[in-house]
Amino acid sequence: MLNILLYFFVFFVIQVSSFFFVESLWALFTGSREHTAELIIIMTAVSHIVTILIYTALKWTPFSLDFFRSKAGNITYWCILAALGMLIPTMWLEELIPEAIRQDNMADTFKTVMQSPWGYLSIALLAPVAEELVFRGAIQKTAVRYYEGKFGKTNRAHWVAIVISAALFAAIHGNPAQIPHALLVGLLLGWLCYRSGSIIPGIIVHWVNNSAAFLLCHLYPRSYDMSIIEFFDNSMLRLAGAVVLSLMLFVPAIYQLNKIMKTK
Image (tube, rainbow, N blue to C red; front, side, top):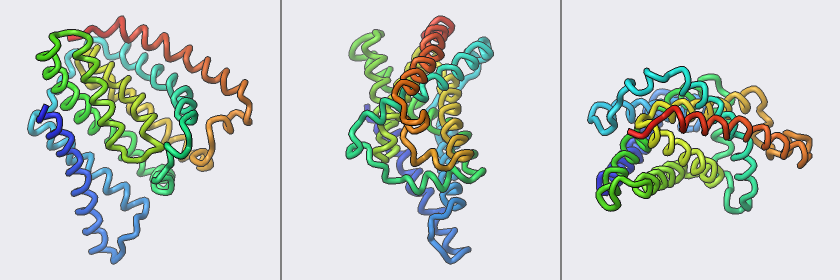
């Protein structure tokens, strides 16, 4: 259990120290500490790269392509459909939560990053790899071993580990507006890791999720300030139809992934 806290703490320290280090260098060379899009992107990119290097170098996350390589095409296809199918339903569920609870404390920061083309490098490419290495690769797999020692090799042990990794994943985002979505996505990512024994399917879903958010905000800047129902001309009927169509992608995708992937 101490290792789980260690992995989470190290990730947190990397984030904070990387931000401080980059901000200090930026101020030294530019004479300003203003959090511009460029500075935020460099901060987050550096923290993700350092995370990837440390967790792989210390072998905290066993990493192998063997399982994924044997079924790469099918897994990638269904992971993409699952990720696309969950976007609208999870956004809608998130907006059902009272606004006072999901207050967005980082709206301006995210809009700034999302609207910069370089933001894609940090948000959609580096973040999925770094976060899956930490939360599914290191934390969840360690939690599985710990709870298998308590409950045996049962579904209970695996689901406790999945919930823990998802909760920590949501908590590290630190922004109330992101936590509900991050928790739901974290549960799916944890299940994918559990079924496949690999973090690769989770990286794919994570990449699609972040890419969709980036592209929407980059191509349509007003979208970040809009509610989900406003995308459908404030029509609950159209929104409900979109949710149903999305689930028609998501449910078959999960069914197929469950068949394709076998627990290691």
